[in-house]
Length: 606
Image (cartoon, rainbow, N blue to C red; front, side, top):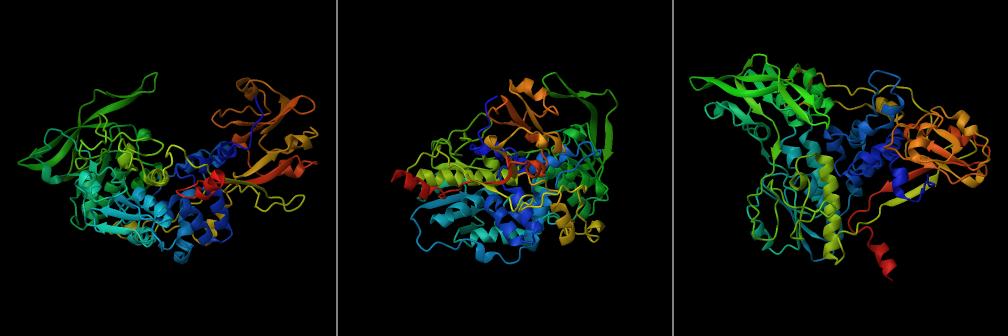
């Protein structure tokens, strides 16, 4: 194998598993250490820079960072279900305890640059575009069909999960930068919008249409069958205040979980979720399923809806075919009937939450924006430009339904493209991230971070006793960590961004680091091809998704090979090394957003 070039930002970035997995590449260990130090406002601003909505995401994020967390791997033999650090809920700790940070937010610019940008929809992707471009002097107008900003975050996420005050605060930070918010205006013509003279248009309108089910009895029972997305919005706006006693929720995603939990609070005494797939294949986040079941809502899997049953024009229930899940050799799933008789489930109302669809009837097909066979705009995955270069798409409107953190990442990327396009640069040339690598040495055996590895299991977030009554849509279920519990949870973080940096010329090959390593992740051996080399390390390196750290040849012709996958970042190798060949150096990667690389490019041009 060739020696690892640690000048490549991706080398150490991939070791910070949580940050690598986050679509917005939030520097997770950095803000967790700030929380541990009681610097909640600083931790909030670290989050705000990258993910824009720390208070919202601290309650609702799909948490792609947590399955990637190193604790899951290094603790796999210490319990039946090893748990990651509660990264998402620690984000909420920073938001809840930050105090007033309004003075730290960008102020409206005094001298606009004369360019006008329209954002269609006031959801997370559009607001991120506005957040990045407004401080550069762009005149941003955000158009939203609803009266307030927030999009899906406001109208489809229930208040018992996300208080409205949090949405108001975090959307307000952006609108207060001088962004023009036009609420209550639905854009019904892209051609007309372009005619208003905007230099660029960003479409962040989400996937606003919920899928329906065309089954026998659907039309006859229409009054008691509701599309989940529309129903949740009607609950938010107060158009729906109660529901029947017996409710069936169809679907296996997070929207289905929000529907069933909302139905319980609006009077549903017997609420069930029925899903086509197996329980483990449901798209809903595991914690969302757990919360629904905690509230007494059964989830019945492998049920294929057959018909809506009615009598005298009144819905009486639904019939379902029982199936089993089978996978072929290529991993494709099929639902095979079990041959058992169809099940009948009585109900008064049905909520359909079987997916979302995009709808672009308002974009004319003769203005240069191409659409694919599924009715989606053809969008460049790097620049987010459509085939009409000054019209860009992001969030669910670009590539279909995902989640808030992906929408934020899309907004950052699109803002870079808008700025480069209007500056006359190539939007495909993306700015390099800002990277620093700094030694944490404070003495011979002292470091500027807490390197002790906590043995604690993950701490549970307490629930409100008032919320357990299930009689209010407004009472938030989770209370969040108190200060003491939050500190203990921060100590579970392994500081994966504090890297073990090896200096070949200082190594005397004494193997002291090998002896002291608690996970056997360091080996001195003869080089070889990667697949073969992985098998003869002190402990075989089984996770091929995590690259090895390999040195240049040492005087004995051996190489140092480190399995980054299971390193605890405990610093014992650096403390034991008699020559200082190992050092603990904090790696900090921050994405470069719109305009932040302008001064660097100007220097290079000069």
